[in-house]
Length: 370
Image (tube, rainbow, N blue to C red; front, side, top):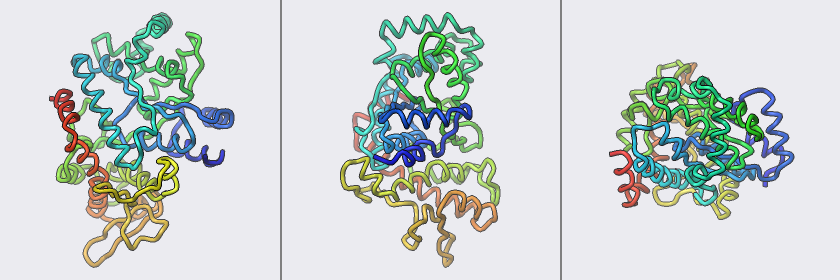
């Protein structure tokens, strides 16, 4: 178990809060409870799963929460059967992602919303919360509820808010785009007699077109976990990345929020062995879990960029160093893109192979998306 200071550092790094007081509340929680409970309900992305790893290292009871009822309310054009297939697909996917990172899926608890949301007491609380809200309270939580003419998206914030109570969470982790939804939870849970939860948020990586990423947007605007190497290359080369420009640079964002955190995780072998409870293996079949650095990199480096023929590689100890080098045009956009492509493909290879070797997953994926 990490020391109190180490736990606080693990839990709070790369997080934002709804208000300044929440960081203090986080410290109180860590001081008063040995194994607080945290869940993430916006699955399928490296950023939140990497953050859940930090919570696991800090001794939290970590839940990966599959919001199948919420998904049905938001994606109302799809049948419940299709949503069920998509939930099954995500279960396979999350297990493959964790395995690619070198972590056993069993290290986390996996819960499906429908296992708790169809109980009588949940429905009673659903009615109570509906009675203290107006329509604008629902619309303010997310774009889907704001623009849709259908009723079901307006019900979905209640589903999200009640999950904090019925999972008995201390922390509900989410993305920065869910800020309004979390304000809803902090407002309305106390109104029906329940305590507030902490709602820290992780950064949301922009789409490859430089705009907000969304499940509703075209696949060409985001890297998909099952994309092949050439598709990853094409998408990265088409992303927003101009020499010397760091603002709205999608490739830099991927390196900052995904690749360097993965590299740091793999670099810390003691942390990996603690999470796995076994000796950690760096290279198992296609799962090459070595940091994204070249063989000649100094020990403190976390990311290397090949500068081209006869130019060697530049090595960086932090994202800040890399961003500074790019801003000063010590690294070209082409070299940065090439490094990102190589690292992303190395990370995705075992996920793609897990899919290719699993006939049941392939069948589920076709039922879910074809």
